[in-house]
Length: 329
Image 1 (cartoon, helix red, strand yellow):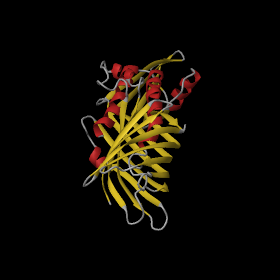
Image 2 (cartoon, helix red, strand yellow):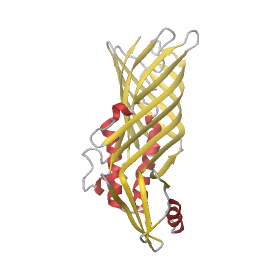
Image 3 (spheres, helix red, strand yellow):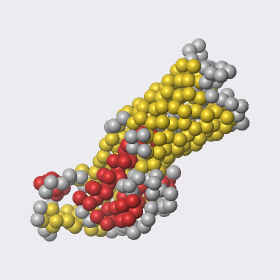
């Protein structure tokens, strides 16, 4: 996970290193991040949906670990690799860049009523995620779910359930652009030459999503194997923000200028000004469109349950996958 998250920051660094203009960076960042923001909804539910459509009434329960990834940037990630003078890794051309997620997961059946409830959560704190090569990574997620058994498994009948869940995730990755003062922008804006220098700059990308998820799932156990399939409908808000973190020095035709003057010049020239401050600049992309998905997979139940799940979004052809291992009683 840390290696993949570090790759996100390094990709944006590559795009920016070749840009030397706000317009070029904005285009490269927004194309990639718009795709990323839309698939974060898929990652927010990692660990929430088990192969068992219903774990059973109290005291039936289970606990384990789930890891997964949603693939983003199909078509928009390739220009970022080209900025580094490299080709996309083999196998990712038709998938995109994997956005990782991981969570501890727990479910327990309630007494009397045919409902199970669950919790998911995961974290990579700064103390563990710092300095993987040239990148720093942080990540955290939390979620809660409840599922109502519409049908209970009996002989030829499968388990069938309807579920609702609420999930939140937040992550970031950053990479150093170099030591000392770096000229990161040299651009003609409105007939004036604007130069932006940064002191010990870092490229940083942050993501966040809050998602409400509804599912309808069927499953049926055959000896040690349980295949399953489901429909999911998620809605909420995902945000991706990225840019340069550093103290900035700005000049207009060689004369000192302010953040406000630069932002005004970009907007007057018809551009989209980034968020500028004494701590750097950034662009932000948001996604609020609902996501309908198909998912399914199979679990193997021996001493523990090993559960492989695959997800497909028909509207965007986005893919996601996860693997979990849990103890279940």
